[in-house]
Image (cartoon, rainbow, N blue to C red; front, side, top):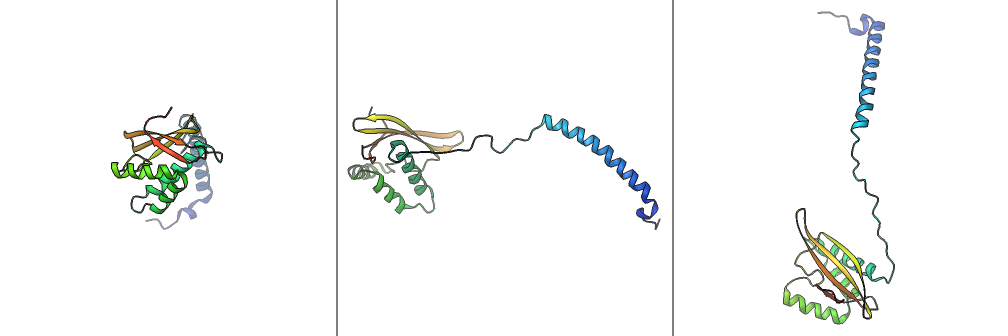
Length: 174
């Protein structure tokens, strides 16, 4: 067994060999890296532009989007839904007459009348559908489920001239 350590053998020669290996490997690696970089660009987490949402106070589409977003958030926690918030949102956004009719509809159909379902959607879209009489109609598309097992429900929400929800139907009033 040799008791001389590599450092004590010939430090100059070892350094030259190490530098040569580094240089050779470095040139080879840099050539490979540039070739690989042009061939394989790593995918970014998201190439889409940042999402933005805008609205105007008093605009029917904004108002309905705000209501459905907050209402779904309040109902979405399966272990502890915020029933108080959901009731407060209904009181604030629905006309008193429609709130009464909706409660009757819910008792008859055993489901949430705002969502027209027993569960909470995973996605929703709100689209302007134009004026109807003295009010405005907004289409709310609710998507339930995920992946290949989704179901869409289209609701037609009638907003009265004072920006409160006067009706929710599955067919258009237009």
